Structures are given as C-alpha cells and as structure tokens.
Image (cartoon, rainbow, N blue to C red; front, side, top):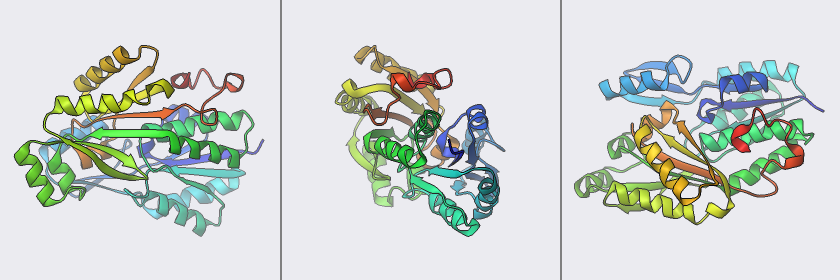
Length: 298
C-alpha cells in the first residue's frame, strides 16, 4: 500500500489528534483583528476571536501564505508516495490555488480537490478518505469517491449579520439597506462552490422552518446531519431537537464553526449540512476498519 499524506486547511475542522494519527497536515487560514494577524485555531481560539470581534469593527481573514505550503510540500515529497490536498471552496478563498501553486513550485505531484464547500463536508471527505486508503483503495479511487461526496452534499446557512456579509463583500449596499429596513432573514446555500441566496424571509422562525422543509426532502437518504453554529448553541440545540423529532434514526452532530465563518457571516450564524448516502461515498460494513475512530460515520 502506498503511503499518502493529506493536506488541508483550518476550515476543515479536522480534530488535531485524528490529524496527527492519520498523516493529515492542516495549514491555518489567518484571522485579522485591528491589523493584528492570528493563525486560525492555533494562535487564537473561536471563543477568543468572538470576544475580540465584539469589541472591534475591523475584522477580516486571509489565506495562508504560499511559503507555508511550499515548506510543507518540500518536506512531504520526501516522506510520502502520494499527496491528496483538499481545501475550502476556490470560489470563496484563494487557498486551493495557492496550495496547488506551491506544489508545482516544489515539483511534487498532488491530487488536488476543490471541495466547493467548507467545514463538516471537508472533514467527512478526509475521514472517509483515510478509511478508504486503509481499506486498500488507490489515491485515484479515493478521489473519485470524494468527488461523489461533493456531488451529494448539501450545505445551508442562516447568516446572523447582514452587516457582516456586506463588510465581507458578499452583500451589496442596496441589499443591506433593503434587508435591514424589511428585517429580512436570508437562507443561503453552497452551489458549485459559491454561496447563493435561496430565499428571503421576514422572520427567523420561518427561515428555520424553510431550512427544515428542505432537509425533509432528502431525509430518507441521509444517515448523518451536522448542525453548525457561530457561538449560538441555544439555536443549534433547537434545530437538533426538531431534526430528531422529524427522523429519530438519523445521527445528529453539533459543531462550532471555525472563526473565519464569523468574519463573513456574523456571530450567531446557523447552518445544516448533510451528505446523501450512496454506495460509492459511504463506508460499507465489510470495509469498516476504522470504526473506533470514525464513530460519527457509523
């Protein structure tokens, strides 16, 4: 079996212990608060970031520098037979392109995958990919299976702050004014790597209902659902309760968003993500060699 290194970024939400035990290398995005730069999840935690964000208007984020990827690839090409790199959507960040450029400079062949998303689905791509690797699949076979995950995933968001969306460049000034005047709540989703508006709804309650109605259409093909929040556990628990009432057999998980989401969507943002089950993207009974480590996938 060829050795494989996995390269990703901090939006993947991969657990550091899992990463250390399974040859996963995480390059952090940067968070900027009043011109001070921090490595996401390394030099500043989510709680610390949200505390700072409440006190400062000038917050932002940036992709990792190319030198950090270059240094990593120079090392990995000496230690592994193959490298698979999975990064957050190239439509929202230059991280994927920077990673691929660094690999080219380092003279190393990398199987690059644009996840077209962030957070929970990337984590699933990597965790399932590690499983398939240990089950004996080749890197190219693993890429095909991960591409099937991308085709079958759904990711919906209810942003907490229209002002934050405007400051991050994802909402025009006229849209901001209209939304604030009418007290509109947006339902967003990832679509081919971009975040688009699904609906504009007058109340937060009705926006959540719309999100749950969307989930209901896929519920018979889902085994796991991830509820994500930007420091809004109360509403996350409320969503979990509604989902469990809808389908008690579906496994739910609550995840705190990485801070970079708070930069663009605002503290309090909620999201749901799921991957429709197919024979190609799921872990089969006969292949479950990592069951203790991949309990969320059972």
